[in-house]
Length: 236
Image 1 (cartoon, rainbow, N blue to C red):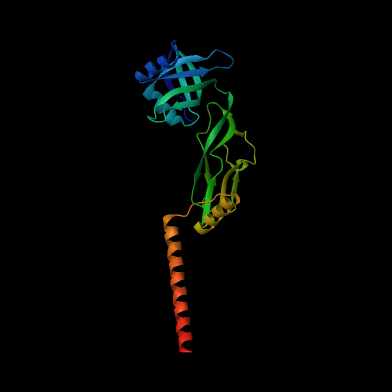
Image 2: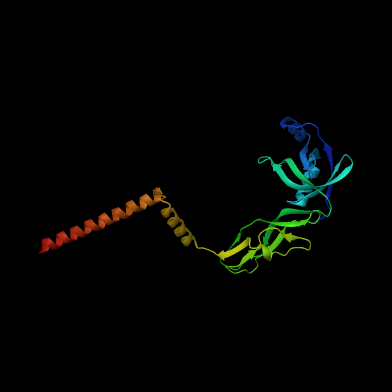
């Protein structure tokens, strides 16, 4: 993890939805810094600088907040984003100190191409580890290059940097490489599962038309058979 980016924060005394909307209209972000047993600090952050710092720092971005001229290391815990406009609406931080160990969820990045006719399933997108607050990995890279069906990568198989220890279960399945199922087999499994669940589907227009055509063809063939039989009887 690179050095935490410095962000100048302003203390705020107004709270509630109305105050938050006014802050956002000024292209700023309301935030809260929760301490170790102390009262939380309610602050306002510059919108663009904070957005860039969080994007650069990743899921566990560590910022150096300058609050009333004092430096406070703050670990990102929750970022609230507007689902439509995709802008940051609020950020929750945890106050930390250098050398302090914290427990965080670090993203998993899967790279490489597995063997042909296999399916790579990322069973867990993050893994929980314990690390020093200023040395949290941005992500763990897991390679599946050439992996055959049946390959499983567990949490204990991850290459952890010095000072980082696994907090999750060692047997936690991270990546599972399975044999690729054919479309026909997938449809058969789905049909079997639906049948077991008692799910019935109405026939599509195409299926109805195909069935009607088959019936008509059968009736035509049956008629031709009766006619041929009648001609044979007459000849006798």
